[in-house]
Structure formats: C-alpha cells, structure tokens
Length: 210
Ligand code: NAP
Image 1 (cartoon, rainbow, N blue to C red):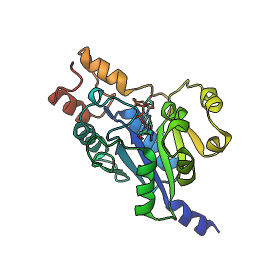
Image 2 (tube, rainbow, N blue to C red):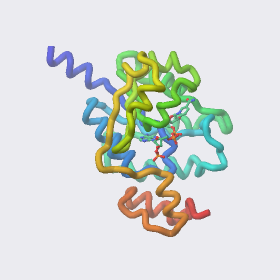
Image 3 (cartoon, rainbow, N blue to C red):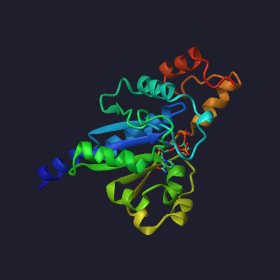
Image 4 (cartoon, protein in one colour):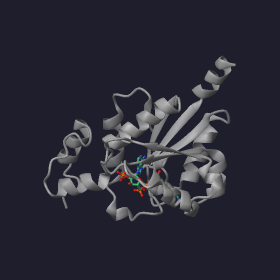
C-alpha cells in the first residue's frame, strides 16, 4: 500500500505560473517548498505570455522575463522552464485553462497537476476563462506572504474551489516584483532579493530604469 501511494505521489507535477517581472527569492522559495511538501516530480515555471489582465506595454519583454527565470532556476534540477505561453502567437491572449490543458495532454491523465501562484491572483479566479473546467483539471497552491489575511480568500471563493486550494505561506519573505522594480528605479540595491545572475541581468540590460 505504501509503495502504491509513493508511486502515485511520484506523478505529482507543479506548474508555477507568474509574470516573473522579475523572478525573485520569494518565488524560488515557494516553488521549492511546494516541491517538497507535495512530492512534486518537477516544477515547471511558466512565464506569462500576453496575459488578458495586464497591459502589454507595462511588462518587460517576454524574452527578458524568460531569460531571468532561466538564470534563477539553473541550479535546481527539479525546476524546468516552459515557453508554452511565451511561444503562443504574438498578441494572442494566453489563458491558464489553455496552458493547463496542454500540460494535461502532454503529461497524460495520471499526473496530479498543481497550479502554483500568488494568493492575490487566485482571489480573482472565478473571472478566469474556463474557470469550471480548470477546477476539474488541477489543484491550486496559493502562495501567501506572512500576515496575509486568508479570510479574503475564503470570502471570495466557492466551497468547491476552496476544497482544491492549498495555502502555502512562505515565512520571513515579503519580497515582491513591484518592490524590486521600484528599488531599481530609485537606484537602490536589490542584492539578495533575487539571485545574483538576475541582479546582473537587470543591471546589464537596464531594466526598470524608467
Ligand atoms: P499578479 O496579479 O501579477 O500577482 C498577484 C500577486 O501574486 C502578486 O503579489 C504577485 O507577487 C504574486 N505572485 C504571482 N505569481 C506568483 C508565483 N508564481 N508565486 C508566488 N507569488 C506569485 O499575477 P500574475 O503574475 O499576473 O498571474 C499569476 C498567474 O495567474 C499567471 O500564471 C497568470 O497567467 C494566471 N492568471 C490567469 C488568468 C486567466 O487565465 N484568465 C487571469 C489572471 C492570472 P509578485 O509580483 O512578486 O510575483
């Protein structure tokens, strides 16, 4: 029985969705914590392509976000980067339902899929395309920062969804991509908020300066 259970658990896969503009230590800690806690065989990082909920001109180019994600994850053998959303045709909105459906098709029906992202993003999930279908396709891991009020999530979310969401609080980390972008703009250090490779990439390519 134990062997069977282990075999099933081995099929768990994480899909870490985010803008990653830029990726930071909080994202990496969350992915690693989720990997360990949910016995994830792999965690696929999926930088958003052309998201329906954001203005394209406010995002760094997808190639920059992709390369920073590669740099940040290069040392972890369990982390894989997926270009699935970035390579969708230009100016075609990318939706999580389409991404998870493609993962399901590629990985087969046996794998248990966990979509990992920020709790604030999950708060609006009932407005996402194909919400009902998405609920059937995967489980959710909602990453929160310390001090996050879970009651907001509980109030805004259906009982059915709540039963498929796990909350993952990352202790001691209050880092956000917004904060990093603002710090760069104000010429403040971002050392240790992200990896040194990502820090160097941001400085070399003069991202977030204006
Ligand atoms: P967002 O609104 O930029 O982020 C909301 C909050 O979640 C921010 O505090 C953000 O912090 C945090 N966050 C985002 N991704 C995270 C991650 N992987 N791990 C930990 N915290 C994370 O969210 P977003 O990045 O645009 O979207 C998140 C995911 O939801 C993406 O995969 C996106 O495609 C999906 N989504 C889908 C639809 C749809 O299908 N209609 C609509 C909305 C979002 P940081 O800024 O520090 O990351």
